[in-house]
Length: 65
Image 1 (tube, rainbow, N blue to C red):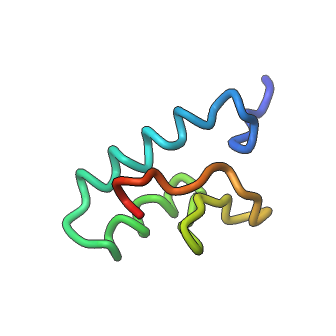
Image 2 (image 1 turned 120 degrees about the vertical axis):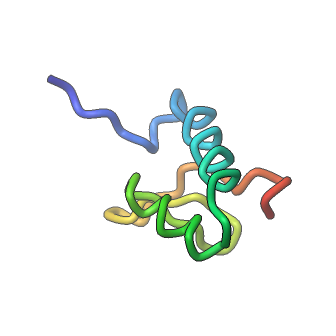
């Protein structure tokens, strides 16, 4: 079994879709960040990053910035 790398440019749109979808479900910014942490993601300085490697995946979509 291969492991998917979230930093792979192929998955950039999928990750942005997850971020948008989770924001729609969350009632607050704090809850949204908690939900993203379940995926191993975090928001820092307008960027979506991985929690483990602190690698940049993509910029935060404009409607959420």
